[in-house]
Image 1 (cartoon, rainbow, N blue to C red):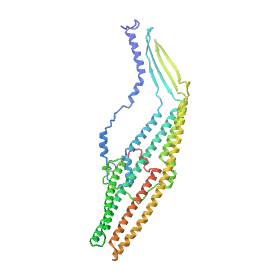
Image 2 (cartoon, rainbow, N blue to C red; image 1 turned 45 degrees about the vertical axis):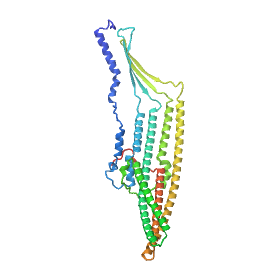
Image 3 (tube, rainbow, N blue to C red; image 1 turned 45 degrees about the horizontal axis):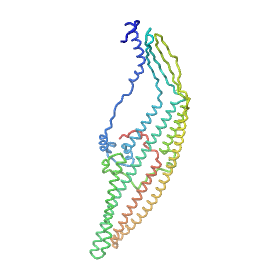
Image 4 (cartoon, one colour; image 1 turned 30 degrees about the vertical axis):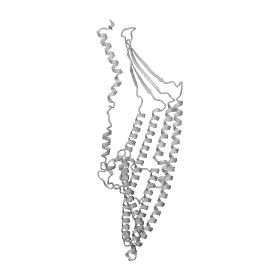
Length: 462
C-alpha cells in the first residue's frame, strides 16, 4: 500500500493538495473558453417531407396573386423557386465562411505536465509544470490565405450569376415554346375549320355532279391531316407547359392554365455593345479570372511556406519546492530536406492551367456568340420572307372576297385562299419562333448583366 513520507503529515498533504489544485486550475484555464463555443444542432433531412413541400409549391406562394405573367415576372419567379439557385447561394455562403476561416489566427496551446519523483520525496515528490506555446506565422501567410479565399468566393458568385442566367434562359425558352404552342393550336384550329367548310362545299358540288369525287378525296385527306396537326399541337402545348413548370422549379400542376403575356412578334436581344464586351463581362470569364486569382494566391502561399513559422514557448515549473521559470524560447522547423519545391511547382502548374482555362472560356464564348448571331440573322431573314409571303396570300384572299361581294367570285376559290392564308400565318409563326429562340440563344451566349443582380444573393421576397 502506498504511504505518505513521514515528512508529509496532514498539514503537508493539505499544502500539496492546494498546490495541485492551483496548478490544475491554471492548466485547465483554457477550458473556460469552451463556454463560448457553438453547440451542435442536428438538422435532419426528411426526403418525404421535401417531396410533399415541392408538390405543394405554387406561384401564389411568391406573388400572392396570379397577376399578369410577363417574362420578367416569370423570370423572377424562377429565381425564387429554382433549386439550382438555392444550391449556388449555399456555395456562396460556404465560400464566404472560408474567408472567415482563412483570416483566423492560430490559437496558442497550453500544456499541463505533472511529474512524480520516485528518487526523492523531500520536500515533495511532485513536480508541477505548465508551458504555453504561441505560434507565429511568417511571410504574410495569413493575408495570402485571405486573398485566396476571397478570390474563391468571387468565383462562387460568378457561378451563381451563371446559374441565374441558365434559369433565365430556361424560363425564356419555355415561355417561347408555350406561347408558340398555344398560338399554333389556335391557328391550326382555324385552318381545320376552313378545311371543313371546303369539304362541305365540295360535297355539295359532288352531289350536284359539278366536281369529281377524286377532288373531294384530296380535300378530305387534307382535313384529316389538319385534325392530326391540331392534336399534335395540343400535345406540344401540354409538354411546353410542363417544361415551363420545370424551368421555374415548380410542379407541372402549378402552371396549369397559365398563359404568359408574351408577344412572339417582339424580339428582345442584347445590343452590339454587350456582345462586344462579353469577353470581359461574361460571368464565366469573370469566374475563370477569379480562379486565376485564386491560383496566383495559392502560388504566393506556397512560396511563403518556404519560410518556416515560429513557435514562442514559455513555461513555469514547481520542482521540489523550487520555482523555475522557462525563459521565452523560439522553435522553428528546419528546412533541411526540402524548401517546399514540390508544392511550389504544383502551384505554378495550376496557375498556368487557370490561365489556359481563361483563354479557352473566352474562345468558346466568342464562338457561341458568332454562331448565335449568324443563326439570328438567318431567322430574321426567314421571318421577313414569311411576312412577305403572308402579305401576298392575304392580298389573294382579299381579292377573292371582293369578287364574291361583287357577285362574280367563287366560294371554293375564296376558301382555298383562306387555307393558304392560314398556312402562311402558321409559317410566319414558325419563323417568329425561330427568331425568338435565336435571340434567346444570343442572350444566353452573351449573358449581359442582370438588372436584379442585388437580389441574386438572397431568396426573393414577394
